[in-house]
Image 1 (cartoon, rainbow, N blue to C red):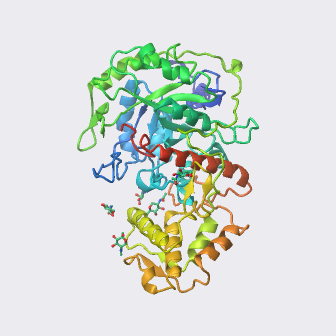
Image 2 (cartoon, rainbow, N blue to C red; image 1 turned 90 degrees about the vertical axis):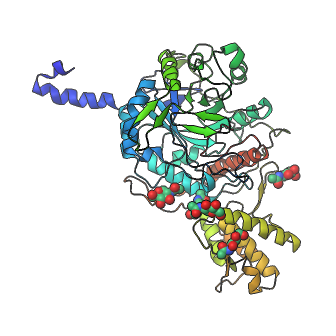
Image 3 (cartoon, rainbow, N blue to C red; image 1 turned 90 degrees about the horizontal axis):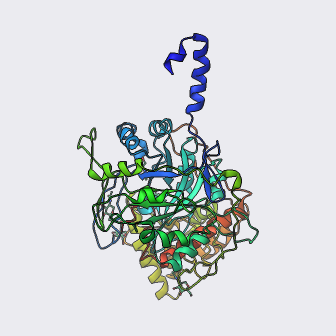
Length: 536
Ligand SMILES: *[C@@H]1O[C@H](CO)[C@@H](O)[C@H](O)[C@H]1NC(C)=O
Ligand SMILES: *[C@@H]1O[C@H](CO)[C@@H](O)[C@H](O)[C@H]1NC(C)=O
Ligand SMILES: *[C@@H]1O[C@H](CO)[C@@H](O)[C@H](O)[C@H]1NC(C)=O
Ligand SMILES: *[C@@H]1O[C@H](CO)[C@@H](O)[C@H](O)[C@H]1NC(C)=O
Ligand SMILES: *[C@@H]1O[C@H](CO)[C@@H](O)[C@H](O)[C@H]1NC(C)=O
């Protein structure tokens, strides 16, 4: 290459060409497969890339979820430290579970892009950044967070997909309406096929029966740990592969690697990309680059020194490197031979899969804020750390309301019946103010009944009762959902975004999201939601 750069006139031309050639190809979906812009089939040969946050063991935390997270794409030096190791493994995708949209991600994203590495970015965060499985709901607070993340990352050319994380769904129109062409994915935990398959179909069905993709995901990820030891396709993957034989969009293993009987040999890597599987699956994500502890054991390919400067690889790293090195991508079927995906009508609820296709309300932040301002008794937290307190106080408030002959149906929702409270989409703090206000009003506005041990404050400017305030705010036709401006230092964020004029599709989007979440919560025994490892 350098030898050909002797003539100065050529340098500019070749320099320009080199830049052009260097740009990471755009990956798009045709039917159930991924292709790069030259029409070559694209497979995900990936690894999970996220340092584990601190896990505080307690009975309140049965899934061992971390209480904080480290955004791996905000640490430029760490990305550059790790890049040579990712390249040794030969990965072309990393999956990142939690990011902080306010931080700068340029160094990492650019370094990975130049190395030909794409990212799958989960939108959920641990704790209050994901769905509370005890009182799941899809509200403005989460929608804002998801949109901020999409905003922060849509300027990069190597975002393969915004992933819904583990059991949290967002929908194509959201990402498309944000000017992002990244694919939209969902990662599901494996489980009994009587709900795994209805869920997979639910995520790619068309509720309007019009064969439209407006509310379908592009990329279905299955977290699959079935293969252990030196197994075979027939004994480990044949059944799951057969179950997805007719699937309509891209399917891949959003996590894989044996978790039950070490050592992990990683021989499944070759099977995953072989002709036994390549017409059904588009690769997978090995779990995990960084050390990750879970109830199932300790995993990870490398350890990082205390001063964060040095990477030490493990035998697992060597074995995965060897097996990934044996993989070759089968470039078929050809893009031109692949039919566009069909979107079947949505599956009916079953005893195992309780998802109604009746949609909950579109999150409407203006209406929720209008309500908060109008309420007679407002939640006024003593510290910023109020997530847990909100949950406790909602329990207390709803039980008090129950004793007073009222109820919390306005703030609740039920994805199996398709019945949603009229403020079920509001931020939990606003729901709490609403409950507090109803209790306060039911007690003749006795100031003591707004105290909630110092968590509530009487709003002297409130003129209407909670019920009336809800009716008036929620029915206000002028209220549109407007996410708050992105508080970011990254250039390129688009600031305010609205879903105005898209109410119909937004409704479809969030409705199915919520219904899935609510139904997943019923199956919570299997579910680990959002921004966390699924090795339970
Ligand atoms: C994101 O980063 C900012 C700046 O460091 C920090 O204040 C904020 O708490 C972080 N957000 C989350 C959810 O960790
Ligand atoms: C999480 O909690 C913080 C305060 O602790 C709040 O500012 C933020 O809006 C919450 N995020 C979500 C998605 O609910
Ligand atoms: C937040 O509050 C909970 C209990 O309410 C406590 O366990 C936790 O340590 C607190 N976190 C911080 C960062 O203060
Ligand atoms: C939803 O409604 C169904 C049917 O009435 C009921 O069995 C179920 O317990 C409800 N779920 C929740 C979370 O309230
Ligand atoms: C608020 O409510 C929580 C949970 O019930 C309680 O622990 C706390 O003492 C209350 N008061 C204040 C000022 O936080």
